[in-house]
Length: 231
Image (cartoon, rainbow, N blue to C red; front, side, top):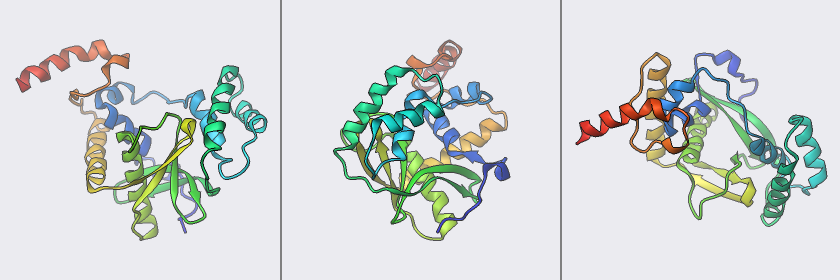
């Protein structure tokens, strides 16, 4: 059984798994946006609400009413996303959740996050609002699963081999078995995250997603400097 009553308020000096993923994507962008409040997208809100009903009959009208209650004023065009997602999810056999939105914490790594779903056998799942890859999982999702597994192992005292990633729009549930490289990535990214929180300006990574970043102009000079250093 999981430890109960864990709240992030009691772990204010801890890093979150969400911030861990953001630093992994681009530490420079995280540096510029670290004081901003993040708001979940309407797309995620639709997929998240649908996820509460997995393993039971998916009634579109009832789920949409819940979405509208959670996100008043949501664009009505996203009802189409819900219908598409339900059609996709109906092609897969899902296990209903025994628990949802469960907080997990590692006191050793000072890391905290949340599991979206836990089934009756104790296997955890995270919900994604993106489409699935043809096979495997995105690097960010592998990092999420590894970080949660690390927290769960400390909380339960048992090995956690991995977790499911549920790509709701495609109706795909994919199990990721945590590899040593995933655990190394968690530890390395945590180190980088703590350095940024202490005020360090991170270096610009070579594979950063600059083409869709509003901070691109600020970073152009630092990119050139790093390339010249490498050459």
